[in-house]
Each structure stands twice: as C-alpha cells, then as structure tokens.
Image (cartoon, rainbow, N blue to C red; front, side, top):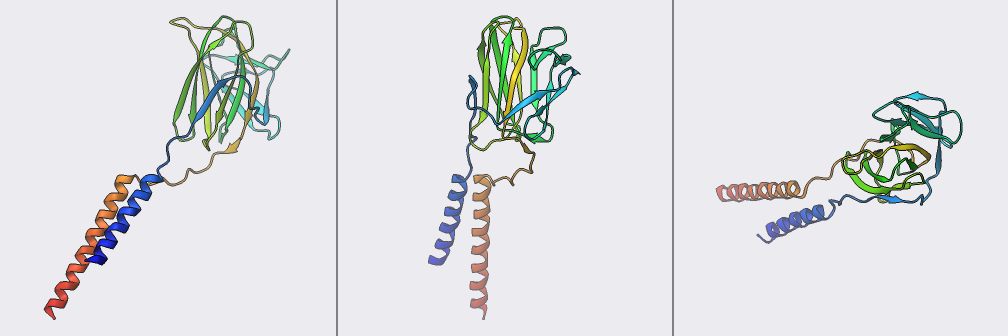
Length: 220
C-alpha cells in the first residue's frame, strides 16, 4: 500500500506540473508613435494599382501585401505611399504571404479627425484590437509589436467615427520587423484536465495489476 500511495502522489504531482506549464497568451502592444523602430523599410512598387498591391522589404527583399475594400495605388510621384483610387481610403490590411513578423509601423494621414481601429491577427488566429484617435491633416504614427514570442500574420485597420467614415488621404512610412517564414506550430500542450484523467487511468491500471498479482499469489 505505501508503494501505491507513492505512485498516486507522483501522478498528482505530474498533473500539477502540467497545470503550471499551460502558458497564458502573451501581449500584443498597439501604441501611438514610431518606436521601437523595426529593422526594415517597406519599399512600395510605385505606379502599381489594384487590390491587392505589393511592396518589398529593403533588406530581405520580402514581398509585403496590402489589401483594401477597394482599389488602391502607390503613386509614382512624390513620397512612397498608399492611397485609394477614389481618393478616400477607409480600410487596409498588411500581411506577408508565407511569412510572419513581430512589428509594424505606419503613418496614417487622415483627411478628417476621427478614430482608427486596429485588428492584429497572430499565426495561431488569436486577435488583439485597439482603437485610437486620428488627427486631421497630420502625421498619425502607430506601432504594433509582439513582445513575448508571438508571430503576427496580419494587421488590419479600419476608420470610423460614430456612424460616419473617417477618410484617410494616404498611408506612408511603413516599416516592418522580425520577418520569418511560417513554421509548423509546436505540438499542443495537453490540457490539465486531460493530464489528470490520464493520471487517474494509470493509477487504476496499476491498482488492477497489484490485485491480479495478489490473487495469483493466493491461488498458488
């Protein structure tokens, strides 16, 4: 019996360790400003029009995709920027097909004061949202950063104020960091309840084995 008690206690300890190793979801930070600076600029393919359009990172040559709810363009003249063909941009998604990243900076030039909502999607489909004020006819820098090992799949922004739309003149000065190819996610850690059930099953199997040995010795 003492050996059996030790076995059960070991299984319970294993279950407690399993409970402690189930990590909480870490933070995605969405903030105003343009710090910390990611390691790559996104060079827009100027003159491209459509939906989506593409840019290229200046160090790794990775293709960055920009998608909207309308046709967009990167004008060939002036500062590299993304604008709507009809002149009023209200939505934009940034992603890198086949890759993930850890940080993004962009500068939103709004035609009217209002607000912008960001939706950050990680490669495990978790999402983080944040809503911020937009100043009219000025620089509105925003920085999105994964601070605890997450990988970002895409960043969407939409602009709304009350029930009206805030029109954006353009999006420019885009920087991106931590670009890596998509990798196979690690195997899921068993849920604590599953591990406890496993421990209970093993304890039951051990008890049955001990009873069979005792019955066999009684019959000899």
